[in-house]
Length: 303
Image 1 (tube, rainbow, N blue to C red):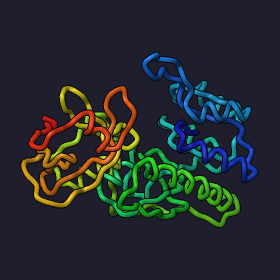
Image 2 (tube, rainbow, N blue to C red; image 1 turned 180 degrees about the vertical axis):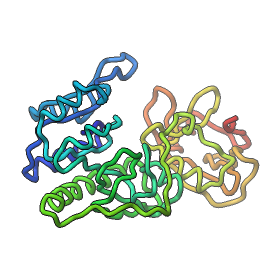
Image 3 (cartoon, rainbow, N blue to C red; image 1 turned 90 degrees about the vertical axis):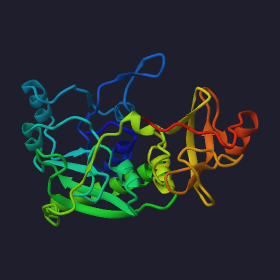
């Protein structure tokens, strides 16, 4: 039971380990892009290519959906970024229950966006927790967990890929351990609970009033989605990469030199890779040759 790219590696790992996947559940197809072409999510498309029966219900609360789920006779359900709430009859249907692959070290970062929130908060490590699901929001007992460092230049996209591979490996070990009775669920600690709220597009606009490190974390945490940006000359300029910059600063949002060093609430930040609307991404120096942003320009902050 999963939907995005994060979950595809987990499906493949289950198959490679010799498990029989009797069905896949994924989010329903949705219109995407400017043409609003209806498109299946990555797990749905991958499962169909593999010939695995796939279901895409909008809810699992109806008696019919629950009866169909029970009818597959699964020993366990593996859940990874599925996107639907599992009601109690679903949680209890498989013999070994529902096992969740969660991209954080629980109880830190329960919720929808643990990868991005860990980078935004400046965490130096995260990881994957394999959890026995209950009716709470990521509150179930833990089966396995493993740590993964967050480097000083790590983006959310890079961390996503590392955690997906780690989750694929751990969930296979967890299923084997639970089935053999070697692994027993352990309650989550009551201390250290935090919640990873769903990302909002409004967070993508850079706020120069924060310190330079906070701006840097935002650029990395929101890469690739939704992507950070600032406004200049009526355009939204996407910031794909950058770094805190040394030297004297000024009022937040002020461009300090001809290489786009920008004053923050504390310190300064220099974007190194940018993208104008409808154009290819480019290094900052190349962009500035054809689209100068002069020293002394004051870039607006969110209201």
